Length: 365
Image 1 (cartoon, one colour):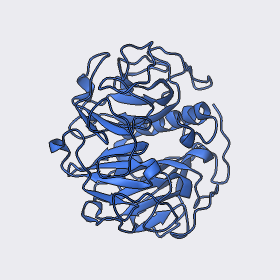
Image 2 (image 1 turned 135 degrees about the vertical axis):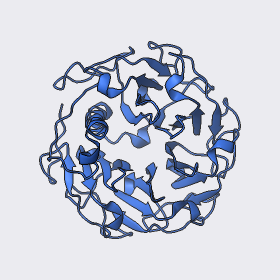
Image 3 (image 1 turned 120 degrees about the vertical axis):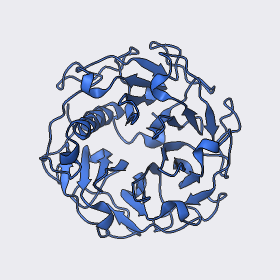
Image 4 (image 1 turned 90 degrees about the vertical axis):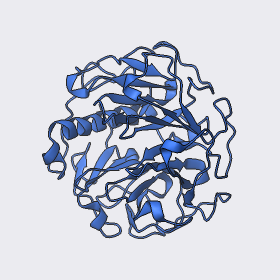
């Protein structure tokens, strides 16, 4: 895992994260209407574990079809139900069958970024990866990967139908071709991207981590290799890369998500907060955020372990009912905010998963 993102023992936090998110994913798939309203008890128990044979065992980091070394990103293909997991330290992505059909410790059915399940090559090609940090599968079944150390975003068509190994990407953003990896600060370059998301209007959003910004690429289906971004948030223009704690700026944006109402949600790790931008697709460069959670205002960026504070949040997603889920990494928990778009700045979370209460942050297996 890249040093800038390694805030503590990555395998411990990643093992916890994947258990929590698998539990959430499973509940979302199986219990639809109930979970959509956030109605579940504190400290909910997970239903499935991958990477380990049972819930009390630490996962294996072996280079096999079932080993997970630093699993930091996870997604479910909406067209097939298949599960994808990023193993950043192995520079690969594993594809599993629908979670409802899996047993604890199940093996993956395919690997992306490597020629087989026992390889772990870090390279810059159309078929290799170098520190993939997060992924997204859009409504058309396209797999998008943010590659931290290759300073690029890759896209693979028909993710659930890719071969068992050796698949090659169909598109690259942030670089002019599949063999370049130079970082940069412009509308065609990136510096350590950590997340990518495609909204319902076919706009691609990228968390450009060390440029302290979020890039938007309009009309994803028409993009070609090296296409320029169309707008930027967090900076006043495409050549700026300063950072501070305001409504217009962000420190270490690590995830992006656009909800059904076209609101953009950004997890700003080093500001210990989640920023919300309303009507995101229409915003001008450098537009201010509409609201903040995890902090009482836009100029505060202190960490904490309460219902209203966060400590290095790594991901934020919103379900169809408007409930926000935040992976609060250093607090070893997921925070749940119901009706999140209507909440005032600094509003407390309604639920916590992974801890018994809002003031505890004990890690464990």
